[in-house]
Length: 269
Image (tube, rainbow, N blue to C red; front, side, top):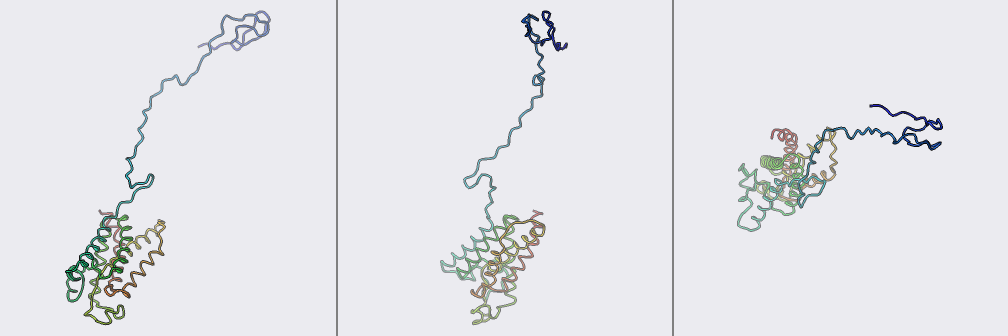
């Protein structure tokens, strides 16, 4: 395609004028009938491939309990079930008609029945003792459940509680740990409640938390509160007869061992 001239010479005055004018700006002489058309280099006129707009993903509607931008935590069903069973046993005892041994507690003369080691953690003879242990179960059981799944708090609670009760029965009452034991000796043997189970949940969570810190993960947990829980549970036998110090110590050791095993078990599930 031919390009327009850079200038046009006026025949009347000889001046060089723009090729895009029809009259000379110097003398007014008509240079041409019409100005040449301008060529438009419009890149938008070139055919372009139509791009299909991808549909933006949409989120489902929020539930009434959800907050926008925050992932909801699942309910600790297993931990709540453990607490619920313990409260149900207390309600049955308060209704009368059944004794501590009939609801699965480890008491004389039934302390050598092994199945009671699995159930005695749910049996409490003191509301204050039950309140403290169940609060600890709720706190550390919930954190373990959200970390490893529903099986973790049940496994640690039952295993640590049973191991502590069995060890306490084999060793027998510890002199000086409780006024009841000092007065009645072995005949006053009662190993009840979730002292060992709660300490097991605490140490299982603590072991996993310390391992994550060594790997460089900073979870920002308050270890002062954990220490307070551990101290209260460990000193509980000084105030409550059925809380055994051996059961608490062995339950804590069992929980620490399970805390090392939980990551391996959770990967296989």
